[in-house]
Image (tube, rainbow, N blue to C red):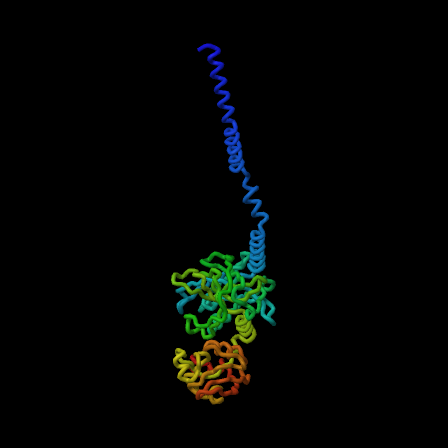
Length: 387
């Protein structure tokens, strides 16, 4: 090839490349753009957006509230182990659960509140209470109330951390709550959820538990949480975790706590008097009061407590209550069912005169009744199925 021929070829190639130059420029620019996307630092996109996102800040604020509540309450939450012995002194069963230290008016030391089934049939020497600071103590005295499945333990120590109790009557569905305790022996565990329902009464719990009224929550509650506190975002105890509804034995998001108002009343009486002072009427209720029976009596719904029978020489008998009466109101408050009536009567004082609105012979009637003392009645009678 001559030099002239080579020059002509190079000239043609140069012209061709010049014609393609705009396309090369576009491709090069696209490549640079794609490279810039690939090499963008993470913080400039994801992290920067997260740091400036109001929703992230709100979640962090919520987490901070939970942290502060847990920090405030945890020192007053304890782990409990108990042993049950037979008459020969041999251990035949062991239980474990949780408890919380609260203050009772008129008593100098904080009292541990827990469920009775955590310490049932255990002597004080067979109950070990592990405090949050690692100390292990045994109660000097134990009080119990089978009607509510509550127990109170006096550790005999002053200056112990305690948790404030709140007004469970102010608890509402949807409210945030935390459950603190020792599920499966894992001490100081915290779970959170909301209040799912209040005034739950018709639950399949032991018949010995006569007074049934619960706060329902979806905060995870598992075996070992029994006796521990359910607290609100003000770090106040609004309930004592007692039971779960589960087919597997683990948390299914349906847990139940005894309201703080009942706890305060029961534990206060136990500490002051050694037993709970309750009133009673002296009636028995049918196994079920359904809509069909209510319609037969002229009532639109099965609301109220139907009397199945009246025991002799009781306040109900003295006031003229009769089998077939449906108690609609107790001192001006509407009665939902027999469990609701039992709860209201048990919160009243023995010797107090109350007014009942009853449904009798297809019309309403008013009955004034002086309530009796439940403990006196129990001691004088072998019958324990009346209210």
